[in-house]
Amino acid sequence: MSNFHLTFRLFSFHGLVTVFSLGIFLVASRTLRQRRQPAAAIAWFLSLALIPYIALPVYLLIGNRKLARPPPAHRNLLSLHELQLSNHYSVRLRTLARSLRLPEPSSFDFFELHRDGSHALASLLSVIENAQYSLDICTFLLGNDVLGSALVAKLAVSAKKGVAVRFMLDGVGQYLGGHQNLRALKTAGVSVTLFSPPLKLLVPGGINLRNHRKMAIADGNRLWLGGRNLAAEYFVGNSGSEHSSRTKNTAWVDLSFELRGEIARQAHDQFHHDWEFA
Image 1: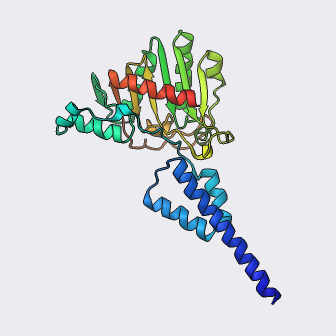
Image 2: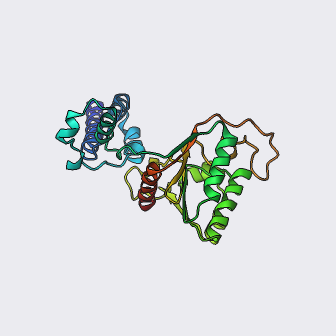
Image 3: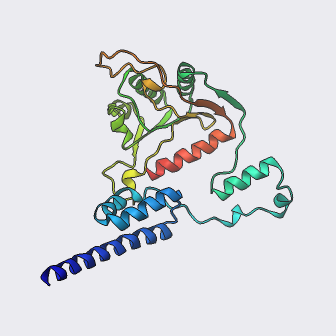
């Protein structure tokens, strides 16, 4: 009989933990307006139902990884004239952007797709060296290698020339890149900030809230962006750290390009928004 009571109490406790875990998941998903892929939502639900003792701490740590988007404003509604022209391609793009709460589509005056890493690096250096007033750069990681050190030196030179330079590095990516020493940037007058450092837990889900944007914006009019982090393997091949003797590998195949015009100003606004958050 005692074994029965013990089993019943354990089952009741497990049931309470399961219900509590699922309740947190459902309430958080509702109140934070989180959009998940169906597979991800099912995976979290089953994990919380079957192994709540493990799944609940993991969910509280990294489950709420996205910031809640604000509710749609009245300005997102299409006008009658726009509805009448709804078959026009540009109107369909605007409708899609508004439905996803993204900025309005922007125009550009110049576009260049980079052929390879060397071309991408030349374009990036041109953006940095020709900035006259402001230079904003963000990346997920900065390599502790020859290329990363060269870019740090370039930014320091720009700051010493009087250019307002802001550099934003992801709080986790700073370690994945080999932890490049950023004190030289700060000493040269570059404003440096980390996006969501892993020990900063003031934001729900902050540990897994990462900034993967890679872009450089000069004077709010010239934009370099794409998938390339600021490390040697993305441009010229991995030559290792400055103190490494590893054999150089071929550069990774990746996508990057340069744009100029209104879209660069839109990217500048996005950078500023991320900077203020960081």
